Length: 266
Ligand SMILES: Nc1ncnc2c1ncn2[C@@H]1O[C@H](COP(=O)(O)OP(=O)(O)OP(=O)(O)O)[C@@H](O)[C@H]1O
Ligand SMILES: [Mg+2]
Image (cartoon, rainbow, N blue to C red; front, side):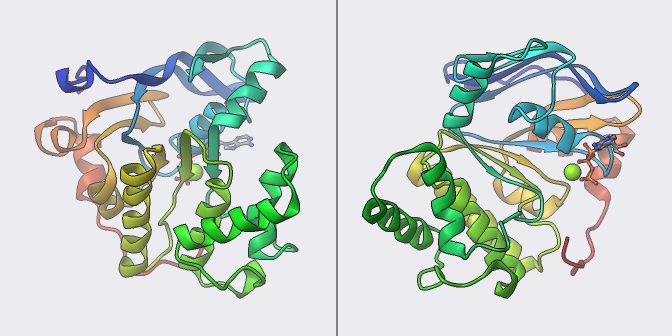
């Protein structure tokens, strides 16, 4: 099913447009001719089974993977096959990223991980940086954890700290790759709630890659589903219509699959 975007989205600002995107590695294209839009203030999910190209698309959208064909427009800035460093720079200022499994710098404390993007991209005095670090720790309810090293954190705390670092520069868009994978259901739900709070209170638009169905059901409104053989989007639209209206067996199989209660940490 490839339904169009529902009318209720028509009046909202389009914040990201992916147009006829082709990306891959070496001789192989992983995704070909992929197009979709993300609207301001929504939690948009990129779905699909392991290996279908979710992280590949994610990395292209944050400017870490070269675009072979097509273009991505984020907040009016365009990325295309020809590298444009100035555009990339301006895009990076609008986005925050939570990489798959949290990805903190393990030789730095939690506080230093949050301070790092601020030190890298601003000339803020140390006092202000420390103030922002405390605010971000409060945002993810990790007050008092500034001095702790990432290795000492639980899985859920690692994701929270990763979210705090992703939110350090008050981004307009937060990209999260598998924010709840490997967490027990209660901890995963706490992360889901945090993402919803960020959308509702901070008005951050969130693009989330996930194949955890409960997380999807908790947070996402619209989504696309990728498929490895199709090398692209096999379904798109509102989550409930994808779940209930589809006759595509690949889409049905995705939603019927049950995620084990506990998974090893990734
Ligand atoms: N750096 C790379 N070089 C070559 N091939 C890669 C690279 N990264 C990923 N791939 C291949 O691209 C395909 C898509 O991988 P990708 O990581 O985007 O999938 P995914 O949907 O994120 O999977 P998962 O759910 O397991 O994270 C896979 O076949 C993978 O082996
Ligand atoms: Mg991935």
